[in-house]
Length: 289
Length: 281
Image (cartoon, rainbow over all chains, first blue to last red; front, side):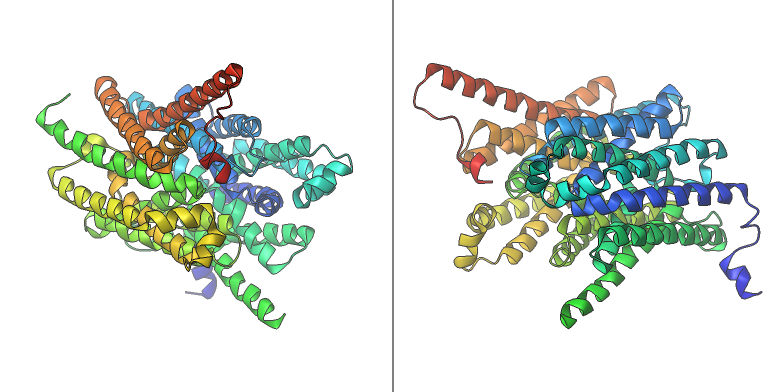
């Protein structure tokens, strides 16, 4: 057996599901990296995590009414982002509470929808698939929608880049320069909702935070410049998704069963390890300084 | 509804609710909503792993909850606290997903872990839950003063020799303990709605910490028992009623307070509204 066999198990490059997974994973990693850097700088990890979890409600409801999960994720995440904006996520004080209460209620609803989905037995809104994702099960027909949504989110951040950065670092100065801080924040939340929904179809609703926060937090430890951090986050995200897909494909031959380990586990583990590793760089730089 | 197989459910869930309400009071006071969300979620890995190797779920939950709490506490010292919490959370959830996949566990079992399953409470769970509950309450009572001081005025606490980091770790430990005992009843995803909704509602109603804590436990108890009763009647999942019930309690308490403040203002009397704690945290 050659070394190539070990890395890419036979049939990897000819597999339709792998092609779709690579395409979707790449698009999602780009969006997550670009949006995620702002999420981390703005300290809104909890908002991102909550949007991700709330997506569960959308996915399970979509299973009930018989539309695709992506439509459910997008619809519910955009609604939830609007609700958070109204409740006042922008205020630091009390925002975690408001987020938490909304999240709790949404998860309660998700519990109900998932239950109804199982009892009605159409099997569409499976608990494990929605929560933990299954990138190999994405149908090729969703690629255009994924790419369109990804482009929309990246375009939003690109247009907003300067005002958003200023509003993030110094809201007072931004307001003094006549930037509509609240509007900018709301549009950013919209981009966050889209990014979260996209990450949810890739690695599942409750794991999607990994792609959003992980590469961005790692990148921000490697460089302090936002634009460079975005590029690094995108690269790290794509790397994690690709290596995760390769490993998951290989794992069909691993113990204890011949049915493969979950892709999401590999992606999240790679993201987590890269964050830990970046700590060493951060530590060395601090010591040098 | 009060048949013999339900007695356990009422008792265990009662203990769980009181502990969640009491611990939740400090969660809200310290603004640790995210940690209260992350630690129970992370404990999912422990429960799934316990199923895989065949040890008791409670043990798995406890170990994973403490690992998560330690990870959040230690990694959060350096770097961005909320990003670390999020990463720790997803890493443990993903490990749980791996265990589920390796162990070929059935979908209903996974669902029960995530969203709770009161009717699945067995006889041998009562004693461990009671013991853990008492330990939690004892820990909260012992830590009450330093925790209170460190949560509201960290600088004063430091000056009196109460290390902020030590208190944070101790609090995360209590949170982990409370998590281990609560998960089997309300599930990893929904505990935190109890730990946030009930105390947040209580704090809208009173500004005295001791009273708020007791009220929080009482509200949590009411929400959980109402959820069990409704779930029994409708066959719908307990988690649904716990999640929405907590939110309803919160909104109702806020409305009550808003109405009370308006009433006090209209009377024009000098009595101020319930401020105090609300302005400190």
